Structures are given as structure tokens and as C-alpha cells.
Image (cartoon, rainbow, N blue to C red; front, side):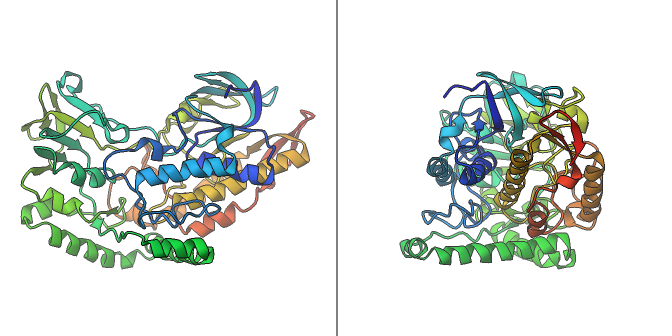
Amino acid sequence: MNLPQHVHTLIVGAGFAGMGLAARILQTQPQADVLIIERGDDVGGTWRDNTYPGSACDVPTSLYSYSFAPSADWSHTFARQPEIHRYLKKVAADTGVRSRVVTECELQEAHWGDDAAVWTVRTSRGTLTADVVVAATGALSTPSVPDMPGLETFGGTTFHSATWNHDHDLTGERVAVIGTGASAVQFVPEIAPVAEHLTVFQRTPAWVIPRLDRALPDAEKTLYRRLPLVQKVVRGSVYSFREALGGVLAHATGLLPVFEAVARVHLRRQVRDPELRRKLTPNFTIGCKRMLLSNDWLRTLDRPDVTLVDAGLAGVTADGVVDAVGNEHKVDTIIFATGFTPTEPPVAHALRGANGRTLAEHWAGSPSAYKGTTVAGFPNLFLMYGPNTNLGHSSIVYMLESQSAYIADALTAMHHNGIAAFEVTEEAQRRYNTRIQSELQTTVWNKGGCSSWYYDSEGRNSVQWPTFTWKFRSQLQRFDRENYVSRRRTAKETVA
């Protein structure tokens, strides 16, 4: 598919966010002028890219899926990466979204032209203009690799877990794993049996609780197919439980010791060595950092052929990794499980607003947006999975569907009212973010005593949503034109 010269709505990214929005638009306007550009060779976003061993969702898939596209084909309550990718490809085909996607087309730059009220978008496959741009690139799309002294001298193999090198055989190798986050807890138990030795470098321990996973029997899948209402009830019950957990994390933090007790029992049952248990016990409130779900991570670290190093890193040599106390660990392969860059999204460097500054320059290291979706100074730009929309308890798909409804309503308002451009007011954005930051102060993410990736370079929590997800949905159930300045197609600027 070739790029058109102009499109009304250009969506950047074909993951859960971008495809969900496109499906929402096409559901009510089948002939809508909407296009998705995707830098990868297929749809799927993070579930296309993260193919590391053991990759799976840590939210029950009955909730981590589109509400408009339930599936009775999941193999487990917590679905694995290959089937989530298959699911997304099927949804893209069934909804007609796939025909609107241009793959291997990376956004390079987009700048707003105030006179013409359009975005000029330069991509790896050419240039086009768009009335509206939606950045749906995700918060976990660009791997973060630390700047380690001497890395360029290493004679072995290196790669990030998000770009797993399947051509490289780890059998019989000495492997260093840098990081102990959500990805590491999934792939380390998978590779430990084949490697000669694993050395896992931990900066900060995390609380780990059991993953209540189970295989879905054929009878249950058949029931879901024949009685879809049953699956809706299951989805609703999972949602309610997760909202209750969110209430504890955000509002009833005094109950968190109950969860901590579960994590401590889990640790004691799986790790026999008292010194190793000490290294694996966090010194912050559970929930402050992302709680990890695993039934085999802790017992894997207790294996004789696995070493946990909690001294930090000093650098890399030609044939090993040096920890903070000067010990060199000889390894053949280094795998980075060091996460992503949610507070410094690369797409922000490619989007240039009305005053000529990029979104990254505008944010200056501390992202903020109105309802996590629009930014003053950037007309006709919508963000999905934007600032302060991440969750510590529930499914981000729920949040993305809430944003899809809001953006689709904005596009409808533009069409029916002859609006060329919408821009949120600075005052509305300021009021909104002042309230969000105030609400965050009493949550475990802000007062739990940890240092997490939720904090940006200014020491501000610009990642987490501070309360129940239904409150986010209620705030985005309609496009509130009263908080936007609009420009009609006559080019005469008015206040909506």
C-alpha cells in the first residue's frame, strides 16, 4: 500500500492503541479517511516485538483484550505472546483495520502548519499531510540500554530482551542478565536450564507474588463460544477485583501489608538460602514499584547454576561484566532486561508544534497532557497511552478504549461543526495536571519509599494514573469542547 498525499486522520502505531482507535472510527464511519503507519513489518506493537522466551501478559487476558472483540481461544488465563499477536492480527483483519495499515513506514518528523491547519508528516516511505495526527506508539515500545563503560569492547553477544536474538544459541553459555523487572522474571526461568551459568544483576529487588495462571479447558472455551454472556461476566468480575486492588494501592494503602505478607511467604517457600532471601527482600512498600507475578522466578534464582549480584554495575570488559565492588564476571552473552523509556518517548522528538518546538522540548523532561491525550500548543494532536495513564493494577486496554472514545468523539465534532483545528487551553491542562499530581501524593506509587520508572527527570510522577480506571473513563466519555480553542474551516479563529 502506497502513502496518499493527504489523509484526514493519521495514526502512528498499529498496536492495541492505534488499531483500537481505528476500529472505533470505522465502526461508525466505515468510509472514514483514516490511515495507520507502522514502523514494523506487521501489526501487533509490543506483542509483535517482544518474542523472548516465556513472554506473556501479566493481566488476565479476559480483561487484557478488546471489549468489542472477545475471544474464546485463549490457552491460559494469562495469555502468551504468540497468541496475543495472533489475536491482534485477527482483530485487524475482522474489523477492516488491516487494509488501512502501511507497514515498514516509520515516522521521522511531523510539524504543524498553523496557516494551512495541517500536519506535514515525513516518513521513511515518503511525505504526506494530515488534518489530525494520533501518536499511538505506546509507552513500552523503545528499549532502554544503559550507557555502560566498555560495552563496545565486549567480545561476546549482546541484545535487549525486547529485540531477542533467536539466532543465538545460549546452550552451554555463561550469560549475564542485566535487570530484574517484568521481562527478566519471565525469560530467566526459561533460559536457566540450557545455559551453563546465569549471572543476574539486580539494582533493586521487587516484590513477587504468585501468578494464578491456569490452562483453559476445552469445555470452558466451548461455554464462552455458546454463551458469550458468561465470558462478559468473567471479564466483569476480573475488572472488579482489579479495581479493588487499585483502590488499595491508591486509597487504602494501610491494607498493603496483607499483600506483603503473601509475597514474603512466597519468597520463603521458593528460596532456601537466607542470604539470598535477604537480597531479594525490598525495603519499600509493596506496590510502590510494579508487583511481579511469577511462580518460578524466585526458585530459579536459588539454583546452583544461577548467581544473583546485587552490587550494581561498574562496566564491561572484553570478556565479562564488572560489578560495583570490582569483581569481574566472565560471560559469553549479555542480555539487557532494562525496560523502556516511558517518560522520554522517542516520538516526542518527532512532533513539532505550533511554535516550532518539538514535544520533547516542550515537555523538557517532564511529560504532561490534558487527560493524557492532548497538549496545549499542539493542535489536532492526540496521544494514546500518554502521560499519567499507566496502571499498577489493571488492563491498559481499558484505558486505551476510553481514549479511543474521546478521540472519536472529537473527530465527530470536527466533522459536524466544520472545525479545522482543536487545541486544549493551557489553563484546562494546568488545572487537570495539578489535580492529578495532588491525587498521586497519597498513593503507594508516590509515598511507598521507592525509586521507580514512574518518575521523570524532574522527579515528578508523570506515568501513573492515580485512582480507579472507571473515573478515567467517565472523564473521557465525551469530548469537552468547552476546554478547547477551535478554528473553523473559514480560518477565522473562535472559541468553541
